[in-house]
Image 1 (spheres, rainbow, N blue to C red):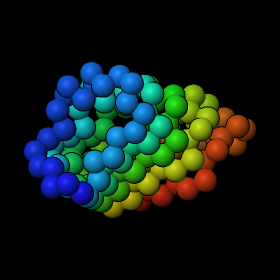
Image 2: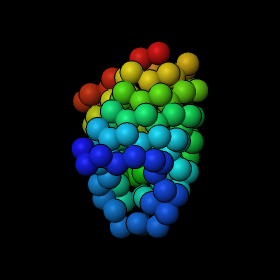
Image 3: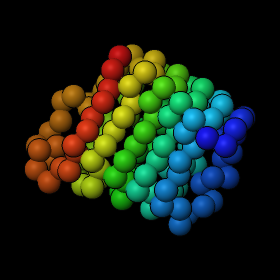
Image 4: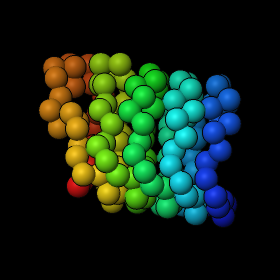
Length: 128
């Protein structure tokens, strides 16, 4: 925590070589900018313990082919939790998205065989 306030700027997507983004435990507001999807090299993404809200654009997770850990818990995200394509994100091992306002978990709880075959998922925390 460094006391960040305001929204995450859309220019964050210009940091195309970024491999880790940890903005947890701040006072960030607004929604995740869709430009975050351009951070295709991310291995760790964390925005937990903020005041972020809105629907998460489903293109964001689909573009993160190297992602290993996603921490978005304790915010006010809503709508349907974005589908996770475990076949395209074989290194994904942690998804922590509890304590949000999601009204549906989408296809996350109805995985196809790619969830079982080749998946590294070890820790999946979701709730409604």
